[in-house]
Image (cartoon, rainbow, N blue to C red; front, side, top):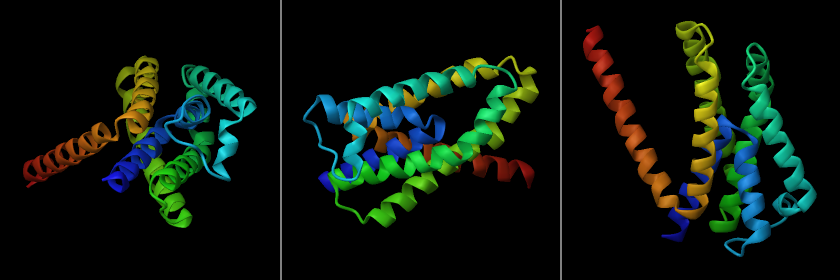
Length: 187
């Protein structure tokens, strides 16, 4: 059961990194540094360094502000195309190593794929649709919602990974239902 919970935790953290690269990194850094829930192993233990925690906090603020300014948010998403998948790979590997002992190569690949997929869905599908349908006015509320979801998912992924598992199953069922419904409407 611990193996399964560890995997769900890693998936939740890496998906969260697809929305905001620094929130899940900050979450595991703070939890590892200030609690005994888990201990980061090398080379990921550097995340628990107080200076790294401060740096991650500053990066969260910078990304939060950059994502709220029209036009700058699109530049930020372009830059984050490289950062978010790497952050997802790091949090997946760091949390999976702690909880499950999964191969580092497989962990990094899974985290990269998950965070990259979430980021592409956000930057290439969701945000352009919001910009087009609201003339850009909806970008700030959507960005705030993304930050809230990223924070909640990061915390829940560490504290209650079963919630993440349930959310993933629910999301998969809803996605399947919607795609099936769309296919029937097209036919």
